[in-house]
Image 1 (cartoon, chains in turn purple, orange):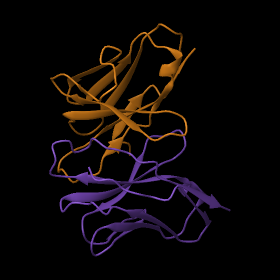
Image 2 (tube, helix red, strand yellow; image 1 turned 180 degrees about the vertical axis):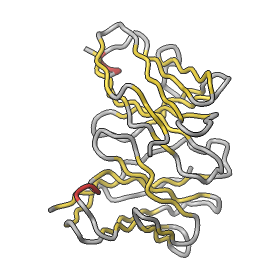
Image 3 (cartoon, helix red, strand yellow; image 1 turned 120 degrees about the horizontal axis):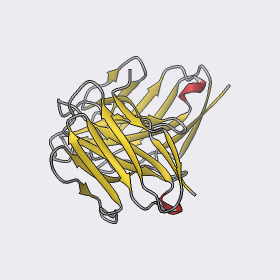
Image 4 (cartoon, chains in turn green, cyan; image 1 turned 180 degrees about the horizontal axis):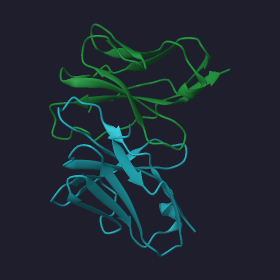
Length: 113
Length: 116
């Protein structure tokens, strides 16, 4: 799977929007962009994923650049419970190793009250 | 609700003993499950891929005789840490996928293993 680059950490205030960037310049046409987050002492939790178009769900929005070389996870109103490590991962749905993930270091999101 | 159940959530064992960790898919059949290990302040690292009815595939550097994986049914994979030592203390996490191929992946809540 292609590599992603994320900032090591970001901070936000409660109730404010958060934009978490991810660069993936070597993305291939069949790579899906997945976001997961990991709260302390828990397994990762699915947040959102997409291929080309922007995506919205109850947790977040995913904005994908037109050239697909970058994406942004948007938390519309951060809460203290959103403090976690956020991982941006590319997954090739056509590959035989789908589900076999390579995790980067992710972005540690701190939310201030 | 939870899609993957992992048990136990934490375990403390003495050096030299073996520990079994279970990972269950709750409402679907999982022919493939993945086992990860996470050391403090580090990211998850894939240990092995568990395939129902066949041998597991281990990542480079992971001792298959130490980390025994059994995937005897379509809903259960187990990881047994044999002859555990303090350096095996870590957070172990399983995950699985379900059809279609672009679906989200689901993770267990992890097992904190402490070897004394």
